[in-house]
Image (tube, rainbow, N blue to C red; front, top):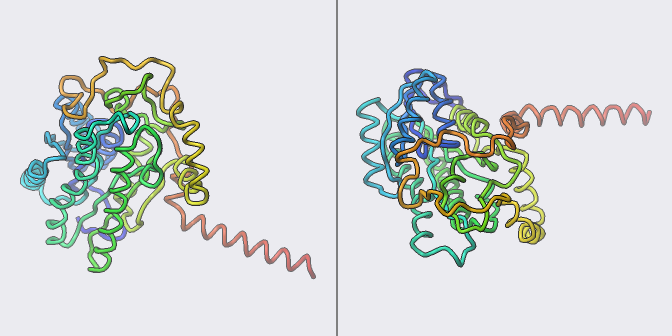
Length: 342
């Protein structure tokens, strides 16, 4: 597949998605499969990989399930080798895998902090290290980093995850500058996500008194999955924003970060917990996969309060059209003003 400013996904396209057994990664894998692509699924959970592979096949794609711990660079390199041996050169790589700990900072142990960082940040780095040289050698390829509004704006109870996402953002920007300097045909883009109805809230390591939840408004994984595929098809943009909450958060943080600190100090603890007590027997996927024996699926437990559309995502994808419309409206207003003045 020749990659240009706009990528065409076909049955010959080879895609790899990390963290693909639930949430955004799984939704994106299924969306790629709708084009008939071969989709390599990288994650740790055996049952989750089986379930995701079956859904990819039902959607019309070919699935290759590869158990991989993203914190181990040798496993990641081995996964890249296997994909290219079984399916051919990788055209699109999606970095999405992560883990987290929901707890105040002083209740997170050093080893847990290190593990979150190794998976959620260094996992992106290791995967990019493994696949980028091959893409450069072929002179084609696209890498999509799945980010978050938390890549710009930290919130309480998620210090390890926020730190990892901030690191991914810096890594993405530095890498993109280097590729531009080299006039490289390889494209790298990032998709900043809102709160998503992911199964992670059923398996995240939590030390909160009540059940952890995403900060509303909550979006269904399919919204995010479609955004990832669109970004892979249009990778020349440095980043995309999904959800009005992402846009609002980043705008507020740019204008008044101190006020946002105080607002989140008041609301951030309550908004990330339901009224239900935390289940002490809930699985935790920090060290071992929670979906080794059970497939949690694409969605989490918040279907009743999640939306399946994002007007802001459409705006992010059509910023040129909107800019032209705004400019046209401004010119029209100037013209009307002059007529009235006459």
